[in-house]
Length: 210
Image (cartoon, rainbow, N blue to C red; front, side, top):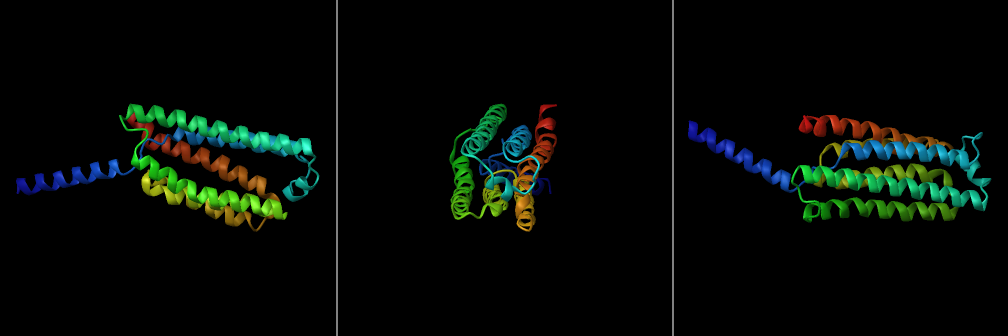
């Protein structure tokens, strides 16, 4: 009886090791919190760059000057760079603490599966911008971002899938209110990231740190 129990324990341990080796588990919740904060600040600045009185983003963009458009692109670029840099910093730090490889086949698969929907979504959004369908850009970014998270969730913690589903649901709702995309964008990339990051931190990182 004891031998059978030891055998089952060995199988469980092997299965656990295989799962850890096939998933990148060092994603930091703090990076999600900071990314959300950056997104909220960026959305507030973008609203000020455009018309802060009118909440309809379609009407805002119609009145944009060339200088304001450049400021808007700079705002988006800074938010993106800060989010990526912070994510890399916290993830590398956590990976070192967990003695996990920062760059291996699992991470490569994670990034590839994340990048494919993001690239497709980016090209699709650019096409809509050139065609003048501005109101549906924000919903599309949320939906494609959610699809990217779900696609990549096979190679990291399963909680990423829940965030992806939430982003898709929010994007579909935003599609019914195309003039208020900036607000939904702030909720999806700001508030949801902060909530997700906080849950991840208290669920995984704080426990391991104590």
